[in-house]
Length: 283
Length: 283
Image 1 (cartoon, chains in turn orange, green):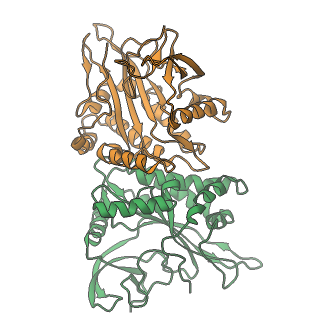
Image 2 (cartoon, each protein chain N blue to C red):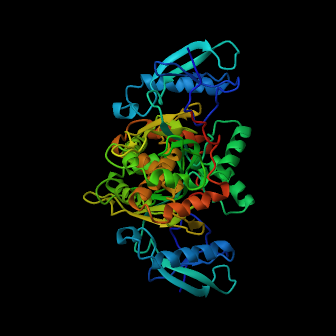
Image 3 (tube, rainbow over the protein chains, first blue to last red):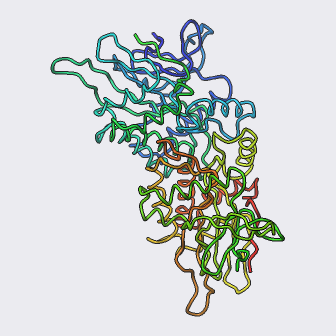
């Protein structure tokens, strides 16, 4: 029995009869294969990546597990359609806090159509992609009260990260994982991850007299419909944006009360630090 | 007595009555202050940078020394005009090999005029900037014979770097210096170096029975007419391009016979790995 994911924060959503991803109870995520080039490109990537023996294991864990493709009933009622079968990253969570961050100051790639390039170019300039090297595509954050869910708004990144030292800092926190990913991007020249997102995810626990805080955080790369071949060149666009995100998070961890990250957010206030799809609906 | 520099490889040149930089015999380089915004921006940068106490000494050495401004007779005969007085980087060299590499996949900046942005955007796409994250703006390389000078042409970067392990490798070589610069760019959020170049320079010694090879190499950043404020964000555009250049050089040092850098150059062969101003004239 497939159902609509509760914690999806970006991308097409399978609500109200639209085509979108589905999940099952065994921890699998069914993503409709887009019928245009994007679908075949994303499948090519997963196929190439999962059979590439030169990917270190500590890097492979940053990618959703790929279980092949499968014909399943599409969410828009259009019948059985091919879907990518992936790991459901939010499986096992009841209150996952999720941030989807599209990496890179440029989300287009040279081989794309001129129309596509111009649309992306415009959007990159209108959002924080150009200034920060990344933009928030979607967000879902639970507060400390049973019913509290934070919606994307100004300075939300500061709020999210400011009080989450246990999630972002430490040897297994998000920052350490991003640094591991960075080391790989300084070296790998096989793939260029155009318009990919870094997903940061952790389970919110309610604060009680003796409990509270958050569980271990996970970092995942998602959305590979625009991956191109690296041809011996590093992915300097992704790497630059990743370094900017790393600096952003480490700055807040080091100086939670200083102004520089705030300045940086104010800079993008012109765009209201926009998310692409607004806040995720929460259960 | 001011004269036209012999070893300038990029930028406006003071030849045939044009306006361009001049040098004297004491090691100073006189760069005409462009009368538009570029001149004032470059001076603002040098003034800010030279008085900025937060720049570490080991980073300051990557920048030309700034001696203020001075009214001198302009090279185009238009009378006494204000010039930036800088360190002449090629001073003391008789056969300097110089490469001027414009860093970044994007050479424009958000505050520029729409016309300027569109022209840069077009050029970035036409050259290797977009694919490699940098492009060669100018080049002057001496061979082992008295009169031999290499002109920019296909695969020239491989030729230059392939047999220059003493220049590019080692603890004081160009690669080590670029890595030092990279560490600073991962941290500094004060300046965004739009459209700046890394200048790599070493003295060619003629090969004799017991001599030959090259002297210590230098790395300098030049051209600051488009520097903007960082506002708490790292310069992810410069950093990405710098990382790509570092990977490029280290790949050739590690595997001089492997194909990946060549592949990478062939990719930009469409553009003939163009320089912006052609080969420098040599003496």
